[in-house]
View (cartoon, rainbow, N blue to C red):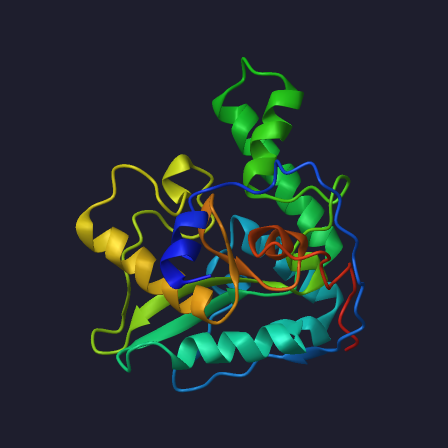
Length: 239
């Protein structure tokens, strides 16, 4: 598909597709991601001490050798390609890659709790359904981050030293997080298209509800690219 066709597809949700896809469950190894001139590493646990990052911090305290960002080998290769495709003044900022299963569950539970706090008239079931829009529930499907196939990324302008404005921060559970959300100004839309285009050209699939999340080799990727199977199941890095 041409890049414009892929951008048009990014406006749709493929999670509602009822067809079953088998998992190849590849044993492709994990690699530790390293910084390059176009890719910098600023893990979410180094900047977020209240939200998602604190769950990583708790995990790393018990597993000190996990203090790095890990991805499946092919996923890391494609991330480097996406970074190199950007104009020289831009860098990809990598916030997260693989996510331990226990951290995934904590992130989901936290999203449910935040929803209930703001919408206490709704039921726990409604809160869970809403939270699942933004966080994969491991009880019903294989989460992209847990199988090492997903990245959370931003863009940095090297000339100014500032992150690009995407409208809302990473990990915002809101419809403003949707890639093609209404109400964005021209610059915010352009910034989202810079990131989206670079990741699509490297073979990643976007997540329509999160402008920062992209994956390769997981079920969402298979749906997006009409593959007959997906590549990666749940597997922890060997540290």
